[in-house]
Image (cartoon, rainbow, N blue to C red; front, side, top):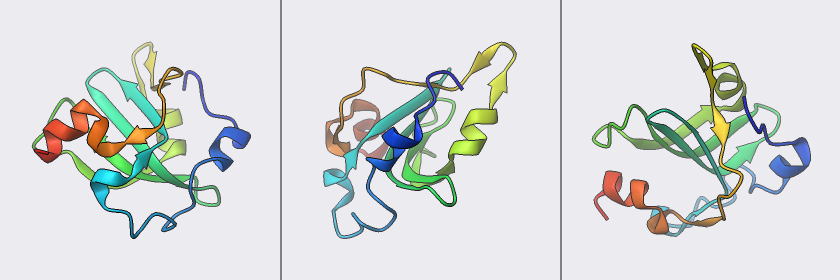
Length: 108
């Protein structure tokens, strides 16, 4: 993975279930990963399991995009020929409702 987050950076993300009562539109997305037409937006993180909770759009398929869990380990291992998953270093935390791709997928 290019620009893999450090342990220190990951500890800044909310723990699993800590934002459970926050409506999906209001959840703060802290990190964005991408490769090709795939995007993963992380709202929570569990360091023991190395899992994120967030929103995933795979292969630009907005109809099947969904909230759920995804693995840091799997993102780290995912490679397509010479490409690897990258982390958007310029991504600023914001509400899910402020992210255009999530708005399109959720029809907000």
